[in-house]
Amino acid sequence: MQQCGPSSPSCSTSDRLPLRALNTAACGSETSAEPQKREPADLSRMRPIVIFYGFYLLCFVLGVACVVCVCLWNSKWRGGFAWDGSSLQFNWHPVLMVTGLVVLYGNGAVLYRIPLTWGQNKLPWKLLHAALMLLALVLSIVGLCAVFDFHNAQNTPNLYSIHSWIGIAATALFAMQWVAGMAGFLLPCSPISLRKRLKPMHVWLGGSILTLSIAACISGINEKLFFVLKGINMTQPYSALPPEALLGNSLGVLIVAFGLVVLKILSTREWQRPDSRPEDMAYTPLLQEENE
Image 1 (tube, rainbow, N blue to C red):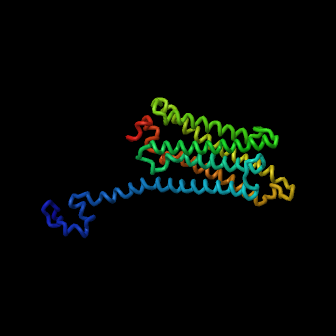
Image 2: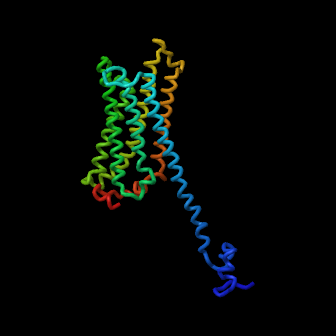
Image 3: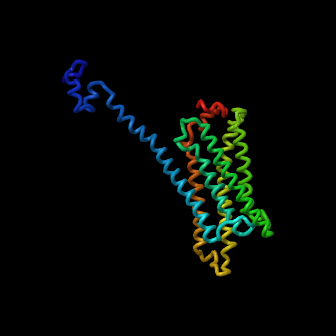
């Protein structure tokens, strides 16, 4: 059989084009095989990103559903909102706590996991993360003020239930977490050694605060439904599952689902920002990050 050498006619361009893949091995060329090898690698790299955006979309939809449900519950079944020491003022409490301490907090926590932020200057995303968390903290504090003012106006004791204990603990830890994060990761004078020590605790405490917030919301929803659905004043008891109870229970399920999706996003290593993985702990001060 005739071998295909450099000057062999069988290796001409016109002869190889119809059977390019077949004659490549005989002609000693590997150029045409490279796209076939790259395509599976590209698909394997895209797969985690596509799955992430699926979870992120689910996180966004669940968060919106939580806010809509809690607003609908307190506007339609609880009479609306006011700031006059009445029960209408109390209605701000669940709305602000769910919106701030759960939904905004969860979305702020997963901000660094968005692939769109990778490979870019980290400073704007740090500032956006801090701003979202600050907004969540402010809403939570206003929500606490609403319930404390209501209790004081009605001569109701404060901080006597497990719900209130968990909620206060979550808000207090959140405030300390935000201050520590601001000092440790945004101030230019923060030493690199402090950031390395603070990072694992910051991440762990962030997930713990979200878990406490979910527990506080679930116990608060259950407590409120027991208080208002007693089967008196022409209302059905909670045990009969009237429409208000169904909505309240559905809100609780949505909050748990939202929290599980957020924790899934935070715990999946493939979705971590590349410069935030344990093997790469190279932090730079705030004023140097525009060069990243």
